[in-house]
View 1 (cartoon, rainbow, N blue to C red):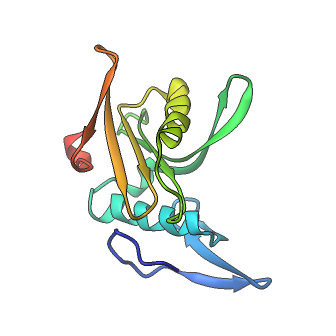
View 2 (spheres, one colour):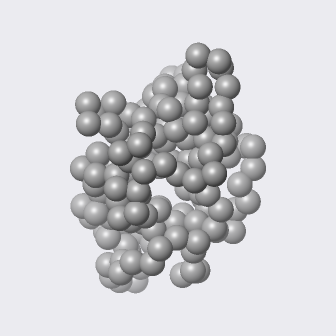
Length: 149
């Protein structure tokens, strides 16, 4: 798989029925190793090991209802009161991050009302903080440490 702009780690990869699978420590199971999943596992590792997000407060593939249809947020981070505060959307490294990607995550946020939205393709990472009082958002230079959120 492609090298990413994220810290390396030792993923647990197996072959099952001829398909490569990677262990997801959040879902506690092996999942298909797609380019997007490669990004997800690296970014989750980054959130836990570098940004100090407690593993227990992360959830992958969080189902929400939006306009009567089921959608899935790639990763949601929760605070210590189990309230969501961050949504992360992953794209494959070959996918360019565009405003359409942010539109997708903004729609998910209509349901969850988090303070931080992150979009990454493993090479480029964008984090914005939502200001609900002023109905605006600000792109941050870097993703904050968990204890500063």
